[in-house]
Amino acid sequence: MYFIGYDIGSSSVKAALLNADTGIGVASATSPEKEMAIEVPHPDWAEQQPENWWKEVVNATAMLLSKYPVDPAQIKGIGIAYQMHGLVCVDKDQQVLRPAIIWCDSRAVEIGNKAFRELGEDYCLSNLLNSPGNFTASKLRWIKENEPAVYERIHKVMLPGDYIAMKLTGEACTTVSGLSEGTFWNFSKKEVDKALLANYGIDESLLSAIVPTFGVQGYLTPAAAALLKLAPGTPVTYRAGDQPNNAFSLNVLNPGEAATTAGTSGVVYAVHDKNDFDPQSRVNTFVHVNNDAGQTRNGVLMCLNGTGIANSWLKNMVGDITYPEMNDLAATAPIGAGGLQVYPFGNGAERILENKTLGAQVKNLDFNRHNRASMMRAVQEGIVFGLNYGVEIMTRMNLKIQRVRAGNANMFLSPLFRQAFANTANVVIELYNTDGAQGAARGAAIGAGYVKETEAFKGMECLSVIEPETSIHQQYQEVYENWVTGLRNQLR
Image (cartoon, rainbow, N blue to C red; front, side, top):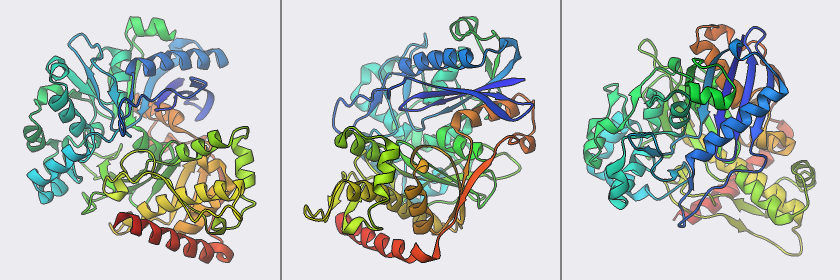
Protein backbone atom coordinates (compact mmCIF):
# COMPACT_ATOMS: atom_id res chain seq x y z
CA MET A 1 0.00 0.00 0.00
CA TYR A 2 1.11 3.56 -0.74
CA PHE A 3 0.66 6.97 0.88
CA ILE A 4 1.30 10.45 -0.51
CA GLY A 5 2.77 13.27 1.54
CA TYR A 6 2.81 16.94 0.56
CA ASP A 7 5.02 19.64 2.08
CA ILE A 8 3.64 23.09 1.24
CA GLY A 9 6.58 25.46 1.59
CA SER A 10 7.02 29.10 0.73
CA SER A 11 9.64 28.19 -1.90
CA SER A 12 8.06 25.09 -3.42
CA VAL A 13 5.69 22.17 -2.95
CA LYS A 14 7.27 18.78 -2.37
CA ALA A 15 5.47 15.49 -2.84
CA ALA A 16 6.59 12.03 -1.74
CA LEU A 17 5.23 8.54 -2.35
CA LEU A 18 5.81 6.05 0.45
CA ASN A 19 5.58 2.26 0.27
CA ALA A 20 4.14 1.67 3.72
CA ASP A 21 4.94 -2.05 3.64
CA THR A 22 8.68 -1.46 3.31
CA GLY A 23 8.80 2.00 4.90
CA ILE A 24 10.76 3.28 1.92
CA GLY A 25 10.06 6.39 -0.10
CA VAL A 26 9.81 5.25 -3.71
CA ALA A 27 9.53 8.63 -5.45
CA SER A 28 9.58 12.36 -4.79
CA ALA A 29 8.97 15.52 -6.78
CA THR A 30 9.30 19.26 -6.28
CA SER A 31 7.44 22.02 -8.09
CA PRO A 32 8.09 24.63 -9.33
CA GLU A 33 11.66 24.30 -10.54
CA LYS A 34 12.36 27.90 -9.50
CA GLU A 35 11.23 29.26 -6.17
CA MET A 36 7.65 30.49 -5.84
CA ALA A 37 7.33 34.25 -5.67
CA ILE A 38 6.85 36.05 -2.38
CA GLU A 39 5.08 39.36 -2.89
CA VAL A 40 6.31 42.32 -0.84
CA PRO A 41 3.73 45.11 -1.36
CA HIS A 42 5.17 47.05 1.60
CA PRO A 43 8.43 46.82 3.60
CA ASP A 44 8.30 43.95 6.13
CA TRP A 45 5.22 42.42 4.47
CA ALA A 46 5.21 39.02 2.77
CA GLU A 47 2.31 37.49 0.84
CA GLN A 48 1.66 34.58 -1.48
CA GLN A 49 -1.26 33.51 -3.63
CA PRO A 50 -2.81 30.36 -2.09
CA GLU A 51 -4.02 29.31 -5.54
CA ASN A 52 -0.36 28.94 -6.52
CA TRP A 53 0.23 26.39 -3.74
CA TRP A 54 -2.67 24.36 -5.09
CA LYS A 55 -1.39 24.64 -8.67
CA GLU A 56 1.99 23.29 -7.56
CA VAL A 57 0.34 20.45 -5.62
CA VAL A 58 -1.26 19.40 -8.91
CA ASN A 59 2.04 19.77 -10.78
CA ALA A 60 4.09 17.92 -8.16
CA THR A 61 1.57 15.06 -8.11
CA ALA A 62 1.80 14.67 -11.88
CA MET A 63 5.59 14.59 -11.67
CA LEU A 64 5.46 12.07 -8.83
CA LEU A 65 3.16 9.67 -10.65
CA SER A 66 5.16 9.97 -13.86
CA LYS A 67 8.24 8.85 -11.95
CA TYR A 68 6.48 5.96 -10.23
CA PRO A 69 3.22 4.98 -11.93
CA VAL A 70 1.00 3.35 -9.35
CA ASP A 71 -2.61 2.31 -9.39
CA PRO A 72 -4.46 5.17 -7.63
CA ALA A 73 -6.53 2.57 -5.79
CA GLN A 74 -3.33 1.50 -4.02
CA ILE A 75 -2.88 4.97 -2.50
CA LYS A 76 -4.67 4.73 0.82
CA GLY A 77 -4.11 8.14 2.36
CA ILE A 78 -2.75 11.65 1.99
CA GLY A 79 -0.71 13.65 4.51
CA ILE A 80 -0.07 17.39 4.53
CA ALA A 81 2.76 19.44 6.01
CA TYR A 82 2.76 23.18 5.53
CA GLN A 83 4.45 26.52 6.23
CA MET A 84 3.29 27.66 9.65
CA HIS A 85 1.64 30.87 10.89
CA GLY A 86 0.12 31.95 7.57
CA LEU A 87 -3.38 33.36 7.17
CA VAL A 88 -5.76 32.40 4.37
CA CYS A 89 -9.23 33.98 4.24
CA VAL A 90 -12.04 32.43 2.19
CA ASP A 91 -15.67 33.35 1.59
CA LYS A 92 -18.73 31.11 1.85
CA ASP A 93 -17.97 29.73 -1.63
CA GLN A 94 -14.43 28.80 -0.47
CA GLN A 95 -12.91 31.46 -2.70
CA VAL A 96 -9.76 33.22 -1.51
CA LEU A 97 -10.46 36.83 -0.57
CA ARG A 98 -6.91 38.21 -0.58
CA PRO A 99 -3.32 36.95 -0.79
CA ALA A 100 -2.17 34.88 2.17
CA ILE A 101 -0.18 36.73 4.80
CA ILE A 102 2.70 34.29 5.36
CA TRP A 103 5.05 33.41 8.21
CA CYS A 104 7.78 36.02 7.57
CA ASP A 105 5.34 38.95 7.32
CA SER A 106 5.90 41.40 10.20
CA ARG A 107 2.92 43.75 9.88
CA ALA A 108 1.06 42.48 12.96
CA VAL A 109 3.90 42.71 15.50
CA GLU A 110 2.57 45.76 17.29
CA ILE A 111 -0.99 44.38 17.29
CA GLY A 112 0.27 41.32 19.15
CA ASN A 113 2.35 43.41 21.51
CA LYS A 114 -0.69 45.54 22.35
CA ALA A 115 -2.80 42.44 23.11
CA PHE A 116 0.05 41.11 25.25
CA ARG A 117 -0.13 44.26 27.36
CA GLU A 118 -3.93 44.44 27.48
CA LEU A 119 -4.54 40.78 28.32
CA GLY A 120 -1.56 40.75 30.64
CA GLU A 121 1.72 38.96 30.29
CA ASP A 122 0.83 36.49 33.04
CA TYR A 123 -2.43 35.54 31.31
CA CYS A 124 -0.87 35.11 27.87
CA LEU A 125 2.17 33.16 29.00
CA SER A 126 0.21 30.92 31.38
CA ASN A 127 -2.56 30.13 28.90
CA LEU A 128 -1.26 30.72 25.37
CA LEU A 129 2.35 29.90 26.36
CA ASN A 130 3.29 32.74 23.99
CA SER A 131 2.78 36.39 23.36
CA PRO A 132 0.14 36.84 20.62
CA GLY A 133 3.05 38.40 18.76
CA ASN A 134 3.01 38.21 15.00
CA PHE A 135 1.05 34.97 14.80
CA THR A 136 -2.05 34.16 12.76
CA ALA A 137 -4.57 35.61 15.22
CA SER A 138 -2.77 38.96 15.15
CA LYS A 139 -2.67 38.90 11.34
CA LEU A 140 -6.42 38.38 11.30
CA ARG A 141 -6.88 41.36 13.61
CA TRP A 142 -4.79 43.39 11.13
CA ILE A 143 -7.29 42.45 8.39
CA LYS A 144 -10.17 43.55 10.62
CA GLU A 145 -8.51 46.91 11.32
CA ASN A 146 -7.13 47.67 7.86
CA GLU A 147 -9.33 45.82 5.37
CA PRO A 148 -12.81 45.82 6.93
CA ALA A 149 -14.54 45.11 3.61
CA VAL A 150 -12.47 41.93 3.25
CA TYR A 151 -13.06 41.00 6.87
CA GLU A 152 -16.83 41.27 6.49
CA ARG A 153 -16.76 38.69 3.69
CA ILE A 154 -14.70 36.10 5.57
CA HIS A 155 -16.48 32.81 6.12
CA LYS A 156 -13.48 30.85 7.41
CA VAL A 157 -9.86 31.58 8.20
CA MET A 158 -7.28 28.89 7.83
CA LEU A 159 -3.61 28.03 7.83
CA PRO A 160 -1.89 27.13 4.54
CA GLY A 161 -2.28 23.40 5.21
CA ASP A 162 -5.95 23.84 6.04
CA TYR A 163 -6.41 25.55 2.68
CA ILE A 164 -4.80 22.65 0.79
CA ALA A 165 -6.89 20.16 2.76
CA MET A 166 -9.99 22.15 1.79
CA LYS A 167 -9.01 22.03 -1.88
CA LEU A 168 -8.59 18.27 -1.59
CA THR A 169 -11.73 17.48 0.40
CA GLY A 170 -14.06 20.47 0.17
CA GLU A 171 -14.08 20.60 3.99
CA ALA A 172 -12.86 23.53 6.10
CA CYS A 173 -11.19 22.07 9.18
CA THR A 174 -8.07 22.46 11.31
CA THR A 175 -6.19 20.79 14.18
CA VAL A 176 -5.41 21.66 17.78
CA SER A 177 -1.74 21.88 16.85
CA GLY A 178 -2.67 24.34 14.10
CA LEU A 179 -4.78 26.45 16.42
CA SER A 180 -1.89 26.61 18.88
CA GLU A 181 0.50 27.87 16.20
CA GLY A 182 -1.91 30.72 15.52
CA THR A 183 -2.15 31.52 19.29
CA PHE A 184 -5.85 30.63 19.19
CA TRP A 185 -5.42 27.76 21.71
CA ASN A 186 -5.67 27.91 25.51
CA PHE A 187 -3.33 25.23 26.88
CA SER A 188 -4.75 25.46 30.40
CA LYS A 189 -8.40 25.07 29.43
CA LYS A 190 -7.68 22.91 26.34
CA GLU A 191 -10.03 24.93 24.17
CA VAL A 192 -10.04 27.92 21.84
CA ASP A 193 -8.98 30.96 23.84
CA LYS A 194 -12.00 33.20 24.30
CA ALA A 195 -10.12 36.13 25.84
CA LEU A 196 -7.84 36.74 22.85
CA LEU A 197 -10.76 36.46 20.43
CA ALA A 198 -12.71 38.98 22.50
CA ASN A 199 -9.75 41.36 22.64
CA TYR A 200 -9.41 41.18 18.87
CA GLY A 201 -13.16 41.32 18.24
CA ILE A 202 -13.03 38.05 16.29
CA ASP A 203 -16.03 35.72 16.15
CA GLU A 204 -15.13 32.12 16.94
CA SER A 205 -17.31 30.98 14.04
CA LEU A 206 -14.57 32.12 11.66
CA LEU A 207 -12.38 29.26 12.92
CA SER A 208 -12.69 25.91 11.22
CA ALA A 209 -13.89 22.70 12.87
CA ILE A 210 -11.25 20.68 14.73
CA VAL A 211 -10.11 17.30 13.42
CA PRO A 212 -7.40 15.02 14.85
CA THR A 213 -3.82 15.35 13.60
CA PHE A 214 -3.83 11.62 12.81
CA GLY A 215 -7.11 10.28 11.45
CA VAL A 216 -9.64 10.86 8.69
CA GLN A 217 -9.98 14.60 8.02
CA GLY A 218 -12.00 14.34 4.82
CA TYR A 219 -12.09 12.54 1.47
CA LEU A 220 -10.78 13.49 -1.94
CA THR A 221 -13.56 15.07 -3.99
CA PRO A 222 -14.24 13.90 -7.56
CA ALA A 223 -13.10 17.30 -8.88
CA ALA A 224 -9.81 17.22 -6.98
CA ALA A 225 -9.26 13.58 -7.85
CA ALA A 226 -9.67 14.35 -11.55
CA LEU A 227 -7.03 17.09 -11.35
CA LEU A 228 -4.58 14.95 -9.40
CA LYS A 229 -5.29 11.68 -11.26
CA LEU A 230 -6.00 10.01 -7.92
CA ALA A 231 -8.97 7.98 -6.75
CA PRO A 232 -12.06 9.86 -5.49
CA GLY A 233 -12.67 9.14 -1.83
CA THR A 234 -8.99 8.78 -0.91
CA PRO A 235 -8.82 10.03 2.69
CA VAL A 236 -6.67 12.87 4.03
CA THR A 237 -5.39 11.33 7.26
CA TYR A 238 -2.64 13.61 8.62
CA ARG A 239 -1.87 17.32 8.86
CA ALA A 240 0.81 19.31 10.70
CA GLY A 241 2.81 22.51 10.41
CA ASP A 242 6.22 22.13 8.85
CA GLN A 243 8.23 22.18 12.08
CA PRO A 244 6.11 19.76 14.13
CA ASN A 245 6.05 17.62 11.00
CA ASN A 246 9.82 17.87 10.54
CA ALA A 247 10.24 16.62 14.11
CA PHE A 248 7.75 13.83 13.47
CA SER A 249 9.57 12.96 10.23
CA LEU A 250 12.73 12.40 12.29
CA ASN A 251 10.94 10.35 14.95
CA VAL A 252 11.28 13.16 17.49
CA LEU A 253 8.29 12.48 19.71
CA ASN A 254 9.49 12.26 23.33
CA PRO A 255 10.73 14.75 25.94
CA GLY A 256 14.38 15.66 25.47
CA GLU A 257 14.44 14.83 21.76
CA ALA A 258 15.10 17.62 19.27
CA ALA A 259 14.98 18.24 15.53
CA THR A 260 16.47 20.96 13.41
CA THR A 261 16.07 22.24 9.89
CA ALA A 262 17.78 24.97 7.90
CA GLY A 263 15.86 25.82 4.76
CA THR A 264 14.64 29.34 4.01
CA SER A 265 14.43 29.80 7.77
CA GLY A 266 16.19 27.78 10.44
CA VAL A 267 14.56 26.03 13.36
CA VAL A 268 15.45 23.99 16.40
CA TYR A 269 12.39 22.21 17.79
CA ALA A 270 12.51 20.24 21.05
CA VAL A 271 9.78 18.13 22.66
CA HIS A 272 8.69 19.08 26.19
CA ASP A 273 6.26 17.35 28.54
CA LYS A 274 5.25 20.54 30.34
CA ASN A 275 3.18 23.61 29.49
CA ASP A 276 6.25 25.82 29.75
CA PHE A 277 7.20 29.14 28.17
CA ASP A 278 9.97 31.68 27.74
CA PRO A 279 9.10 34.77 29.82
CA GLN A 280 10.07 37.03 26.90
CA SER A 281 8.34 34.84 24.30
CA ARG A 282 11.53 34.64 22.24
CA VAL A 283 10.94 30.94 21.64
CA ASN A 284 7.46 29.55 21.32
CA THR A 285 5.52 26.53 22.53
CA PHE A 286 3.00 24.74 20.34
CA VAL A 287 1.02 21.50 20.60
CA HIS A 288 3.09 18.66 19.16
CA VAL A 289 1.62 16.08 16.80
CA ASN A 290 1.37 13.29 19.40
CA ASN A 291 -0.12 15.33 22.22
CA ASP A 292 -3.28 13.77 23.64
CA ALA A 293 -5.37 13.59 26.77
CA GLY A 294 -3.05 10.99 28.27
CA GLN A 295 0.26 12.76 27.69
CA THR A 296 1.47 16.32 27.30
CA ARG A 297 3.69 16.66 24.26
CA ASN A 298 4.53 20.19 23.29
CA GLY A 299 7.07 21.45 20.82
CA VAL A 300 9.31 24.33 21.88
CA LEU A 301 10.42 26.12 18.73
CA MET A 302 13.12 28.68 18.09
CA CYS A 303 13.14 30.19 14.63
CA LEU A 304 15.78 32.19 12.77
CA ASN A 305 14.15 33.77 9.71
CA GLY A 306 17.38 34.48 7.84
CA THR A 307 18.95 31.08 7.22
CA GLY A 308 18.96 29.52 3.76
CA ILE A 309 17.64 32.79 2.37
CA ALA A 310 20.86 34.49 3.54
CA ASN A 311 23.00 31.89 1.80
CA SER A 312 20.79 32.13 -1.31
CA TRP A 313 21.14 35.93 -1.31
CA LEU A 314 24.93 35.59 -1.22
CA LYS A 315 24.87 33.04 -4.04
CA ASN A 316 22.85 35.41 -6.21
CA MET A 317 25.18 38.31 -5.41
CA VAL A 318 28.32 36.32 -6.23
CA GLY A 319 26.93 35.00 -9.49
CA ASP A 320 28.05 31.91 -11.38
CA ILE A 321 28.62 29.44 -8.53
CA THR A 322 26.84 26.38 -7.13
CA TYR A 323 26.06 25.69 -3.49
CA PRO A 324 28.61 22.81 -3.31
CA GLU A 325 31.24 25.15 -4.74
CA MET A 326 30.29 27.75 -2.12
CA ASN A 327 30.66 25.16 0.62
CA ASP A 328 34.10 24.12 -0.64
CA LEU A 329 35.26 27.72 -0.94
CA ALA A 330 33.94 28.65 2.53
CA ALA A 331 35.91 25.76 4.05
CA THR A 332 39.19 27.34 2.84
CA ALA A 333 38.68 30.31 5.19
CA PRO A 334 39.70 29.94 8.86
CA ILE A 335 37.25 29.46 11.73
CA GLY A 336 35.89 32.91 12.50
CA ALA A 337 36.43 34.07 8.89
CA GLY A 338 39.32 36.30 9.90
CA GLY A 339 37.13 38.40 12.20
CA LEU A 340 34.38 38.97 9.61
CA GLN A 341 30.94 38.76 11.25
CA VAL A 342 27.54 38.33 9.59
CA TYR A 343 24.23 38.89 11.37
CA PRO A 344 21.60 37.21 9.14
CA PHE A 345 18.55 39.11 10.44
CA GLY A 346 17.33 40.33 7.05
CA ASN A 347 14.07 38.44 6.66
CA GLY A 348 11.52 40.18 8.86
CA ALA A 349 10.99 40.45 12.60
CA GLU A 350 12.98 37.90 14.58
CA ARG A 351 11.21 36.25 17.50
CA ILE A 352 14.47 35.38 19.26
CA LEU A 353 15.16 39.14 19.27
CA GLU A 354 11.72 39.92 20.78
CA ASN A 355 10.21 40.61 17.35
CA LYS A 356 12.74 43.28 16.46
CA THR A 357 13.62 43.87 12.82
CA LEU A 358 17.37 44.58 12.91
CA GLY A 359 18.13 43.89 9.29
CA ALA A 360 21.17 41.93 8.19
CA GLN A 361 24.63 43.32 8.93
CA VAL A 362 28.22 42.62 7.97
CA LYS A 363 30.83 43.78 10.47
CA ASN A 364 34.61 44.12 10.47
CA LEU A 365 34.94 43.84 6.70
CA ASP A 366 38.56 44.49 5.68
CA PHE A 367 39.09 45.01 1.95
CA ASN A 368 42.72 43.97 2.26
CA ARG A 369 42.13 40.67 4.08
CA HIS A 370 38.68 39.36 3.32
CA ASN A 371 37.56 37.67 0.11
CA ARG A 372 34.70 35.54 -1.23
CA ALA A 373 35.72 32.59 0.93
CA SER A 374 35.68 34.78 4.05
CA MET A 375 32.19 36.04 3.25
CA MET A 376 30.84 32.58 2.50
CA ARG A 377 32.19 31.20 5.75
CA ALA A 378 30.98 34.20 7.74
CA VAL A 379 27.45 33.76 6.39
CA GLN A 380 27.33 30.06 7.36
CA GLU A 381 28.81 30.75 10.78
CA GLY A 382 26.46 33.70 11.34
CA ILE A 383 23.48 31.43 10.65
CA VAL A 384 24.82 28.83 13.09
CA PHE A 385 25.42 31.49 15.74
CA GLY A 386 21.88 32.81 15.33
CA LEU A 387 20.50 29.31 15.80
CA ASN A 388 22.65 28.73 18.87
CA TYR A 389 21.50 32.03 20.37
CA GLY A 390 17.98 30.57 20.28
CA VAL A 391 19.12 27.21 21.64
CA GLU A 392 20.56 28.96 24.68
CA ILE A 393 17.14 30.49 25.36
CA MET A 394 15.61 27.00 25.17
CA THR A 395 18.11 25.57 27.65
CA ARG A 396 16.94 28.14 30.18
CA MET A 397 13.52 26.45 29.96
CA ASN A 398 15.16 23.26 31.31
CA LEU A 399 15.35 21.68 27.87
CA LYS A 400 18.56 19.68 27.73
CA ILE A 401 19.49 19.51 24.08
CA GLN A 402 22.45 17.20 23.59
CA ARG A 403 21.52 15.44 20.37
CA VAL A 404 19.54 16.76 17.41
CA ARG A 405 18.24 15.09 14.27
CA ALA A 406 18.06 16.65 10.83
CA GLY A 407 17.22 15.67 7.30
CA ASN A 408 20.17 15.53 4.92
CA ALA A 409 19.08 18.65 3.03
CA ASN A 410 19.46 22.41 2.61
CA MET A 411 22.18 23.94 4.82
CA PHE A 412 22.94 20.56 6.39
CA LEU A 413 24.40 19.49 3.05
CA SER A 414 27.36 21.72 3.93
CA PRO A 415 30.10 19.90 5.93
CA LEU A 416 31.26 23.27 7.27
CA PHE A 417 27.75 24.15 8.47
CA ARG A 418 27.39 20.78 10.22
CA GLN A 419 30.78 21.13 11.88
CA ALA A 420 30.08 24.69 13.01
CA PHE A 421 26.67 23.74 14.41
CA ALA A 422 27.94 20.72 16.36
CA ASN A 423 30.86 22.62 17.88
CA THR A 424 29.06 25.87 18.65
CA ALA A 425 26.01 24.23 20.24
CA ASN A 426 28.08 21.33 21.63
CA VAL A 427 25.58 18.79 20.34
CA VAL A 428 25.66 15.57 18.38
CA ILE A 429 23.93 15.84 15.00
CA GLU A 430 22.28 12.83 13.35
CA LEU A 431 21.42 13.13 9.64
CA TYR A 432 18.62 11.01 8.15
CA ASN A 433 17.37 10.14 4.67
CA THR A 434 14.00 11.80 5.07
CA ASP A 435 12.20 15.07 4.48
CA GLY A 436 8.93 16.78 5.34
CA ALA A 437 6.95 15.30 2.45
CA GLN A 438 8.03 11.78 3.31
CA GLY A 439 7.21 12.46 6.95
CA ALA A 440 3.72 13.59 5.95
CA ALA A 441 3.28 10.32 4.06
CA ARG A 442 4.33 8.36 7.17
CA GLY A 443 1.85 10.40 9.19
CA ALA A 444 -0.86 9.55 6.68
CA ALA A 445 -0.10 5.85 7.10
CA ILE A 446 -0.54 6.16 10.87
CA GLY A 447 -3.70 8.27 10.47
CA ALA A 448 -5.21 5.69 8.14
CA GLY A 449 -4.55 2.99 10.73
CA TYR A 450 -2.28 1.11 8.34
CA VAL A 451 0.76 1.21 10.61
CA LYS A 452 1.33 1.93 14.28
CA GLU A 453 3.56 4.77 15.44
CA THR A 454 6.23 2.28 16.50
CA GLU A 455 6.31 0.80 12.98
CA ALA A 456 6.10 4.04 11.00
CA PHE A 457 9.82 4.75 10.81
CA LYS A 458 11.10 1.52 9.36
CA GLY A 459 13.04 2.26 6.21
CA MET A 460 14.44 5.49 7.66
CA GLU A 461 18.23 5.38 7.82
CA CYS A 462 20.78 7.40 9.78
CA LEU A 463 23.29 8.57 7.15
CA SER A 464 25.90 10.14 9.38
CA VAL A 465 26.65 11.35 12.89
CA ILE A 466 28.59 14.57 13.54
CA GLU A 467 30.08 15.05 16.99
CA PRO A 468 31.80 18.08 18.53
CA GLU A 469 35.56 18.00 18.04
CA THR A 470 37.69 18.78 21.09
CA SER A 471 40.40 20.36 18.96
CA ILE A 472 38.16 23.09 17.54
CA HIS A 473 35.24 23.34 20.00
CA GLN A 474 36.94 26.10 22.02
CA GLN A 475 37.71 28.09 18.88
CA TYR A 476 34.05 28.13 17.91
CA GLN A 477 33.05 29.11 21.44
CA GLU A 478 35.36 32.14 21.37
CA VAL A 479 34.18 33.25 17.93
CA TYR A 480 30.56 32.80 19.00
CA GLU A 481 31.01 34.88 22.15
CA ASN A 482 32.46 37.71 20.07
CA TRP A 483 29.47 37.45 17.73
CA VAL A 484 27.03 37.60 20.67
CA THR A 485 28.78 40.66 22.05
CA GLY A 486 28.23 42.39 18.72
CA LEU A 487 24.56 41.35 18.73
CA ARG A 488 24.00 42.71 22.23
CA ASN A 489 25.46 46.03 21.17
CA GLN A 490 22.91 46.17 18.34
CA LEU A 491 20.03 45.37 20.71
CA ARG A 492 20.84 48.18 23.14
